[in-house]
Amino acid sequence: MVKILLDTDIGSDIDDAVCLAYLLAHPACEILGITTVTGQPVVRARMASALCRVVGKAIPIFPGSEHPLLSTIRQPEVPQAAALDRWPHRANFPVSQAVEFLRTTIRKHPGEITLLAIGAMTNVALLFATDPEIPSLLKELVLMCGVFTNRLSGVGPLEWNAIGDPYATAMVYRTPVRVHRSIGLDVTCQVRMDAQEVRDRFRSPLLRPVLDWAEVWFRRTDRITFHDPLAAAIIFDDAICGFERGEVSVELASERLHGATHWTPASAGPHEIALRVDAGRFFDDFFSRV
Image 1 (cartoon, helix red, strand yellow):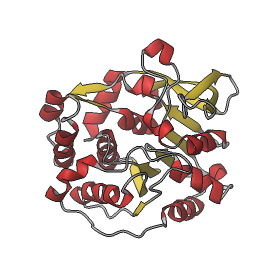
Image 2 (cartoon, rainbow, N blue to C red):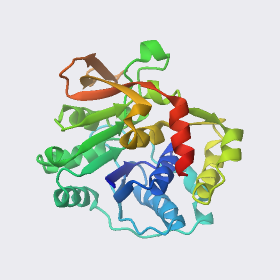
Image 3 (cartoon, rainbow, N blue to C red):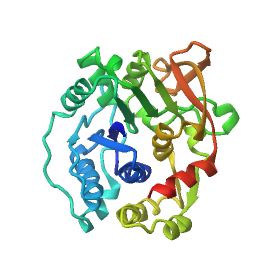
């Protein structure tokens, strides 16, 4: 079993809910806890609890930081919560305990936990700042964050999680971790599915609430991009993506590019960056689980 702590901004882009469903269904995954980040973190915690209830798992859930360290909040609301009341969920959660929960849980399982961060990096940065020994106690840190080969992929230089809290993103990339992996927008944009295919294939009981929330998402776009599920999938099968080593820096000087990620290849670099994806292998794995 792979022990995972999930830090998520579930309720904005639908891919967070898709990711959590995948983790809940994966037979090799043991979710030790979930923390939420950015606007209305308690509402996001309620959404996470709804999915956990579908599978009957009592997973600890803690609302985390609502505001970025220094910048302006980019997603103050939770659009998909418009469909939350159709699904049973917890209403109340302990507040201001997310970072401490992450810290104590990692200390209970030194060298065993994968921290999967698929939202703004605020909670992770606060965790590392609060207890500087924590990064060395992680098995690995996996991020859905950044853009690393945008000149080749055609996507822009900015990625939502990275710019959600640029200073936190910079802190996380500056912190040495035993295994520090990132799956960027340039790679995740290669795993997409249009709305009708999603409706046709999201048939399992666990995906029913996800599809309900996806209908809110489909008001603004006609597809799902599996950003976060791809980051989760490589934890169990890293052959889904091809990785290369290098060093990531985060732009903080330019107002226009605040939070942009810059990657420099280096054989002994501290970061592993996904540069390729086998989309067929990913989808085969995803639907074999959910």
